[in-house]
Image (cartoon, rainbow, N blue to C red):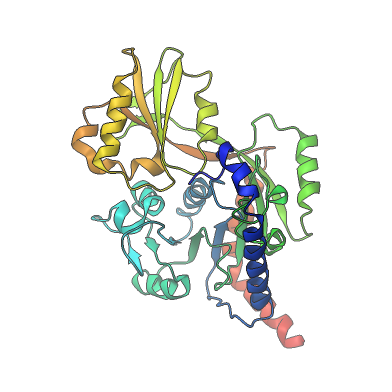
Length: 368
């Protein structure tokens, strides 16, 4: 369900009592972790956790991909995700026969783009990490995808993402709002990235947001925008340039397609939207609906466009898609205010200095 759909918001207000109970449960859970009533596990290697406090698209997958590109040539890294909406259970390591049904759409996307990096899934990350290290003992660092709220693991570096258009500071608990964790949980993060910012964000706007977030002295706040790559065909990978005459049927099954719609506005002649529930497992009837909608567009200069995450769940219709102008729009984050190197250095330094920091922390504990 797209929780940002405007018509749902008035209905969600009436669910405030449910939100209050949900929030109470979350506070009790966090208190139990803080007091060590519920234990957390630490591992003897650098673990980077990427997550958010809200449901919906804050750009976790593009950030994970950014980190993979940043680190994979300097460190032996692996990625561990939950594998949302897959049809398997337990620990699974991606291989050449894996599909989105086996490991989930986002891990499958990572596996396709970074076949040289171990990509694993597992609901119980405490159990999955030892299994991953057993299969890939050379692993020097692990990226945990969407795990900030899963406190069973103590990650050494927590990266919190929050959408510029819906900052966690202005949100409320599910189902009235989008928060799945308490606002004050932001204090557990080391790096906060405000994602999906407008490219022309001013320094004054930046400072106002930093003041609103109120970061702790140990926290760094960064700002990023979405950068779109070259459109390519879903099957044959042929590239395509959208122009002012192109009419686009936008097919999405993601939490929040608003940024893509903004991208198409002004770049295409017109676009039409066919939206499905987040992480939808497409069936042949969905494809037929897409083809029917596409045939109704009365121009020769037309394409169907989808996201990379949706594409991994559509490629099973390879024979049908090969005959269609069906294209994919890749995205990646771009840091604002020339702070990309600062972010990169923080992440790389965390891994490079992990052993020394462990020794320092152990020495300080012994003194106490």
